[in-house]
Each structure stands twice: as structure tokens, then as C-alpha cells.
Image (cartoon, rainbow, N blue to C red; front, side, top):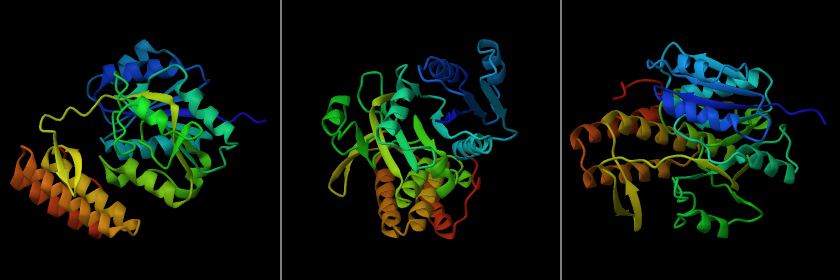
Length: 308
């Protein structure tokens, strides 16, 4: 059988120490990685020099961008580079996360083999994303918050159509052939949700591989609060007005493209409730909420508001 080449892609920006931990965790994997691709979104903290000093290996391909293209631009660039250079499988990661165990990637690949999936198939498999204490970092299934909870809900080692991309996310060449790359024009948020939605719409094999563990810290937003929205308890946090703009715009555009405009309106209402519920600049966030919704409806993407 012909060797199917695999690359990892990590997008980074001014998080040198965390990136070094990420790279070390990849190098520690007991599955042979052909190339470690680093997409640097124009860091200014000498990240490149630190990587070259600590890891003098030609296994790392370091791509330094001339401007900050955001997470979306970084993942687009990394996926396109890997695809254009003949890699069959790509594992996507942020710089603040890393494989939790030495067999994280091996478990992802084993899951494809058990299901007789090749790189030509449409595959989007994810590791299970945990904090240090083995609680889930992000919600995966409603009401399930721990590794033990998730394992009780697992069928044949996976949870179908429920993932937390791009955190230890395996993408096949076949999926890229079908749905393309992450949307670089989302700039800083929701590109991973959009890619997941596109994969599900294309009837891809989308699942979380529960034994493949990936570490990612929790969101420590200072104004985070648990409130009840539409009868359901939700943890909400409001960042800067610019972030409110991008998340609203991108979700609106994403849902509209998926013919789920009701989801866009529902999200708008939930976000408005959250703005009133937590401590934040309410007037500016509401302005950006409305602008984001309008721009999303019009398909006005790209870096249109300066992030702060």
C-alpha cells in the first residue's frame, strides 16, 4: 500500500512559549509525521528565531506571513500549502493547544483504518478536547462535561457529527477536494464552525475520536457568566466590540449560506441578551452586533474592522 503522507498545521501569533510546547508535543508523537507546518501570522516576539534555535530540524516548515491574516487566513494558508505539496492528511491545531498524549495522532489515524477510510474519502475527525483536569474545554454534547461522561456516550469509539475544530482536527485530501479550504475571509473566528458545517452538508465522515486526547485551556474571559437563554443554561462572555462584530458577521454569513437563516436570527437575539447580562461596553457592542449582522447578510467579509 502506498504511504499516505501526513502533515500537521499550527497557526501562531505572538505566543512563542505555547508554540514551542505545541511543536514538542508533535515531535513526541509515536506516529510518523512527515512535516510540521507552522503558519506565523506576522509575530513580533521573535517566535521564528526561538523555534529554529530549539528545533533545528528540516521536519519543520516555517511560513512567516507579511501581515496578520487571523486564524482563518492562517488555516487557509496552512491547508493550501499542505494540499498543494501533496500531503494526504492534515492535522490542524492552534498554538495554545497541543496533543495531550504521545498517541493523540496515532489514535486519529487508527480510527480511519478501523472504518476503512482512505485519504480519498471525505474525513473530518477530531480529537477530544480537554483541560488539564480531564473536564471538557468546550461543549461537545449537551450536559456532558467530563471525559467519563463522553465515554459513556461513545459508540464504537467515536461520537458522530460532534467535533470541536480546529483542535487536533484530521482533514483528508478527499474532503478538501469536495469542499475546499477554510474560508480565509472569516478573519478571526467561526472559520472552524463553518468548515464543520460544510463537511456535514457534504455528507463527510465527521466525528470525535474519544481516545485521541488533545489539550486546550479554558476560556478565562473575566466577564463570563452562566445565564438561561431560551430555557437553557449557557455560559456566555462578551469580548471587545470588534470581536462581537466578527463573530456575528461570520455566523450570520455561515448560517445564511447553509440555508439556516433562523439560526442567524436566533444567534442575534442570544448575543443581545448576553450583552445586557454581562459587564461590557454595551453601546459599542450593540452597534457592532447590528453592523455584523448586516454585513453578514450582505456577504461583506474580510478584515473590515480593526481587532482590539
